Amino acid sequence: MDASAMMQGLYSILPEMLVVATALFVLFVDLILPEENRRILCGVSIIGVALSLFSVFAMGTGKISGFSGAVVHDGLGAFFEIVILSACALTLLMATGYSEWEGTHKGEFYSLMLLSTSGMMFMAKGTDLMTVFLGLETLSIPIYVLVGFHRHRMSSLEGALKYFLLGAFASGFLLYGIALMYSVAGTTKIPQLASILYDARIAANPVFLAGVGLLLVGFAFKVSLVPFHMWTPDAYEGAPTVVTAFMSAAVKAAAFAALIRVLLLTSGGLQPVLWKVLWVLSVLTMTVGNLSALVQNNVKRMLAYSSIAHAGYILVGMVSGDVLGGQASLFYLLVYAFMNIGAFGVVMLIAQKEDEGYDISNLAGIGFKYPALAGLLTLFLVSLGGIPPTAGFVGKFYLFSAAIKNGYIWLAVIGVLNSAASIYYYLRLVVYMYFMPANGEVPQPRPPRIAFSLALCASAVMVLLLGILPHSVLEFAERSVLSLLM
Image 1 (tube, rainbow, N blue to C red):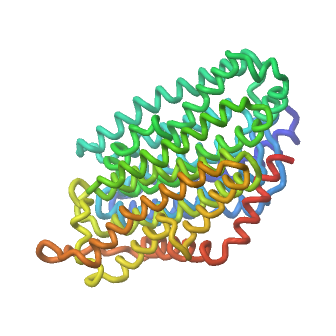
Image 2: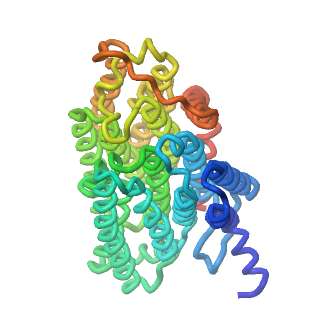
């Protein structure tokens, strides 16, 4: 590789390098800072993420390939980097207050979050299955540690152990699937695999199909598709809530980024049976997620099962297999990041204790005692339920429209019914806030720091703005999908 090719390769991963450099810098500064000054580490992390986000916008959406085609900065990668970095920035802003309450002002906390973010970004830009796998592992290992960061709480350790063990199996399935596909196709580069699939002998090869199936299992685990979702409720409930917010938005976006790149590029050559499998997975994921959420009294577990259901909605757009479906999935992933992180942020303020502060009964009476917090949570829940004029409604409208346009009418009908069912458990929280009397005095929420308030306000503004004026983001999402197919 000559010098110019090396420079182009490094330029193609500039945003990732900025995030990794920030993570290493935070670790170094943590060694020399006295403990009482460690709150500035969060500020340093936010600055690094902001610089990375600026570099994504500066690089634009033109294709910049690097390292012999292993990574590419294109419209799709840029879109998902914006989603991932935005989710990371919001959770870091919330971490300024959360770390003070929970005593997690530690350099490794922020470094692990940044290193995980870099892995997600590599997944979004990987055009080689091995790059995607390395990104997945770079994502996963820090997250395993973050889930168990409250090492003195049994629920945190239990969630981390379950996530680690099942995640190791999923990584094994993914790697074995890549090996099987390579044994037949002779390449792990996604564009070349897409071309090879038009050879009927390879597309119908049972070994190759087994590899595709194992690859799908690995991705299904990361996005919590049923029946590969069993780790999600325990991991989400046991993890520090700021980590749960980060996982629910950023990890899901990264895994879907890789899955969308693979499916859209290979859609023309994949066997019809695989699309039927995705159809079934979408229906199962929506239905099981919503039915499980209906019976939860713990708000974190309810949002965990809700997260599973939303993965099913996103899969509806991918089953459509065209530009409209891809556009809808991208838009919904961005919207989901804002409304879910916002909901977890409000819940963080309301809960007094990590172990027992997330029971639904703790919401009783806050609607009139703390109207600003209750109003924000209501907005995020209404958007998650897909009620207009919020961004959640626009996202679901485009997802189900794409399914109908491509002939998946029953899939759209099942999606609408599931969305209607989800409104019950979202509005149940609203009913508790405004209509249920508190058992004793209404507990006082944690006082938010300015950065925490900024994150909540930014999330609320985006939920409303993308619900009223979604067109520019939808056009960006459409261009991102088209850049992949050109």
